[in-house]
Figure 1 (spheres, one colour):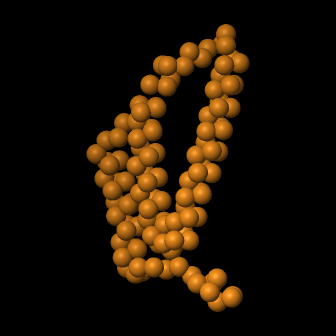
Figure 2: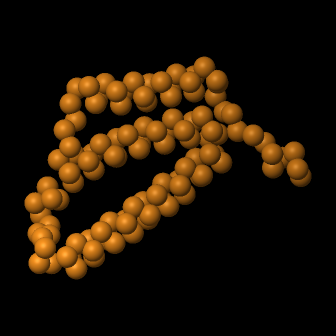
Length: 109
């Protein structure tokens, strides 16, 4: 989709640089938002729960954006691999137990 929607060629390289810069800013911005929510999840739910949630959301959003923006093929092998990754992190969470937050704030006060 994107490769056909943006007419970039040798005649308009300035447009290419503007698009690349905008995409760089978008990457930094989305990473900052993800980090913000990940830190909040760490504080509220502990490391394992936050990691499982972050992994699941990352896989789902990345796949949707890859499909919509770049036309990536999400075949059955990809779906099975993504499912197994999420299932594996969930199994680790179950094996470790519920809340694994460290109570460092309570110990220091």
